[in-house]
Each structure stands twice: as structure tokens, then as C-alpha cells.
Length: 142
Image 1 (cartoon, rainbow, N blue to C red):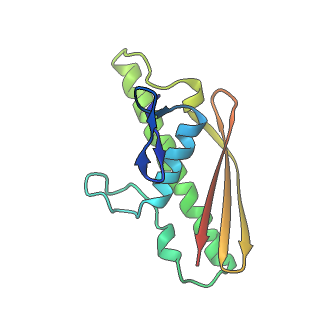
Image 2 (cartoon, helix red, strand yellow):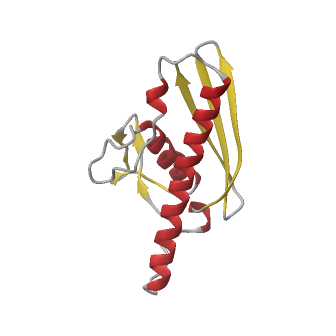
């Protein structure tokens, strides 16, 4: 499934128009946007986004690390659920699926956190239906 490419929050220009992304870069972009968007900020999609920004200023503790991991799992699960709903809708309407195997998240292989002074670095590794590994990096600075 193609989606418009973003660079620094702006649409990216390509030859003859706007660039698109698919596969691993699309998943990385989608999850990056979901993790960066404040939860409930979009009135048309009130369940979209994350509460990661609300942890800014909190002391880095083991509890905060678990809260961040939990929020990341929630956002990924919401993303996977949305993909599955779109796949099911395509199947029920007997339409060609809008997703390729490279676009569908199969499993979360790891979520690693690393504490560094006032920063929590999170590395998420996902596997797609095609077997490709997608890594998403996120930094939470407190």
C-alpha cells in the first residue's frame, strides 16, 4: 500500500510529483507519526496518537521505562488491528487487497529500551508478512 512520503513533516517531492513510500519505510513512517502525535489530538481520530510526550519532565525510573514500553505496545497493537480491519474489509467486499506482504506487520520481535542520563531510547523491531525486519527508533527525553 502506497502512502505519501514525509520528510521533516512535509510532503516529499519526487520526479513528476510527490514521493510515495511502501513496505518497511511506510511502516516506519506510520508508526513514527503515531508515536509522535499527542493522544486524542485529532478530533476525527480521537484514539490515534500516544501519550509519550506526557512523560517529559518525569524522572527516569524503571516504572517510567515500563510505561513507555506499554504505550508503544498499545500503539503497535492499534496499528496492527487497523491493518487487519482493512484487510478483512477488502476480503468481504471481494476487492483486491490494498496491502502487499511487505506492508503487513506479522509480529513484534523486540522492544528494547536504553536509559542514558535524561533520555530513554527505544528500538522496536517488527517482522512483516514477507519476512522483512523493520526497525523503528524513538527517543523520549525527560
